[in-house]
Length: 279
Image (cartoon, rainbow, N blue to C red; front, side, top):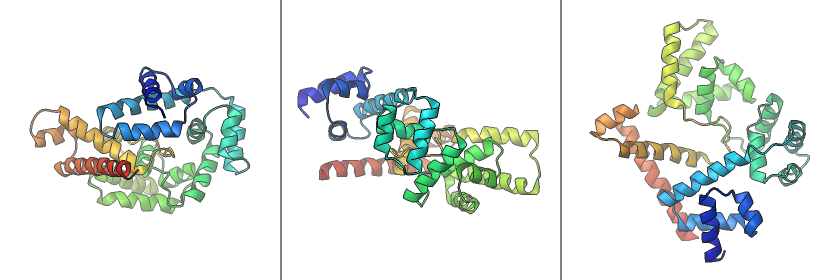
C-alpha cells in the first residue's frame, strides 16, 4: 500500500470514518492495511490503542446494521448446517463476513445458539470458543444450576464441572470457584441462600464484571483476551498513587497477581514484536 494512501486512510479512520466507508472510497486491501498497522504501530503503544479503539467502535456500529430477523435466522441456520459458506451468507445479507460472524455469535435465539456451538465444536473440540469464567458468572447471576447452564449452551454437564475444577488453583478466580462450587452444592441439596448471602455474592461478582461474553469472537484469541485483562490491571496500577500494597488492595488483587499481569503483558508484547520482526 502506498505511503500517502495509508496515512490518508488512517487519518480518516481516526476521525471516525468506518473501514467499510474507506474501503468503498479507496478500494484498498483490508488485510494489507491491518498488516501495515501491525508493523507501524506495535501493540502497547498509544497510537495502536487509538487505532484499536476506533476499530472496536467500527465493529460496534457495524453490528447495528439492520438485517430482517427472519432472513438472518434462515441464513445463520444454513451456515450452521453447512448448507452454504460464510462468504455467501455475508453476501446475501450485504455485510462483511466479520459483521455476519458477530451477528451469528450474538444471536439470542436459543436454537441458533446451540447450532452455533455445535458448529464450533466440530472445529474446536477443546471448547476454546467458550469463556468458562464468564459462563460461571452468568450461572451465578441467573441462578442456574450447572446442568441448566450446560443445557443453555449445549455443553456436556461433565465438561462444565471439569472446567469449574480448573479454577481451583487460579488465585485470581479463587472467589469465583468457591461461590460457584457452594452454589452448585446447594442447588443439588435444594438449600437456599439467605438474603444476606445473596447480597454478598452479588457484590463479590462485581470483581468479575469485565469477563466478557461466554462465546468468544473468532477474531479474538484467548491469549489476546488474557493480555487485555492484564494490560488493564497494569494501566490502572500505573495511574494510582501509594505503595504497591496500597495499590493492590484498591484493585482487589494480590501482589503476585499484579506481578503476573506485568509479566503477561511483557511476554505478549514481545511475542508480537518478534512476529513482526520475522515478517
